[in-house]
View 1: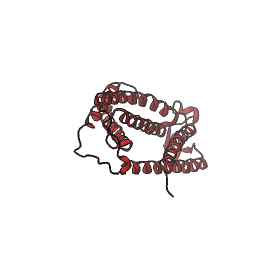
View 2 (view 1 turned 90 degrees about the horizontal axis):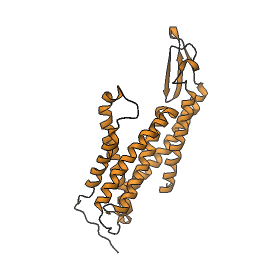
View 3 (view 1 turned 45 degrees about the horizontal axis):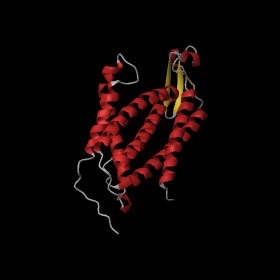
View 4 (view 1 turned 180 degrees about the vertical axis):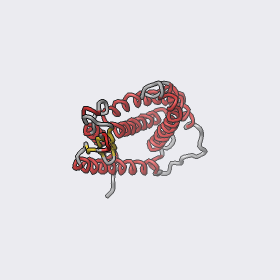
Length: 245
């Protein structure tokens, strides 16, 4: 069965929204992280995992009691597997179409506006990290680690869409709309990888005396990273597109 681009986007959207709902439901089924004793009176410690979803209340002497019913664990596991398959199927189809090159990729030359493109990319980088900081904290509180990861993917896909739109408006203009989508994807994915690596490398020093919002300097640095990557996309590739009739 052929999956169209629109259908693939719908699969990704439904999978991610479903993933957020799933993470909230799972977190609600877990013992309270704020006051475990309220959920498991007299508990020594609480053991929990998100795949498959489950939790145990551990008491003195090693006695443990399952907090999440077995039936609920099975249902939630089946649901998240289906949602993951939906999301990955959509992403694979979109990725394949993104990499595919054809005659439809050829676009009309556009006015060169490198300054606007680089400035817009810098602003996008600042906005993306600011949004990520707020959204992920909310998602972590409501949906735990799965909610935070899902929220990160949603923000990243939104940033890719914004970067592609920026490229179409004022970018290099090579490759038409397909070229804009490719450059927008490369810009956001590369910048995200660089920022995540940088934050992880410095997290041990930061986390000792600060909050989970992450280092404030990441916002400014992200703007610089986005700007540098956008500027690099204006470097001539040495290839010319030839339109055939």
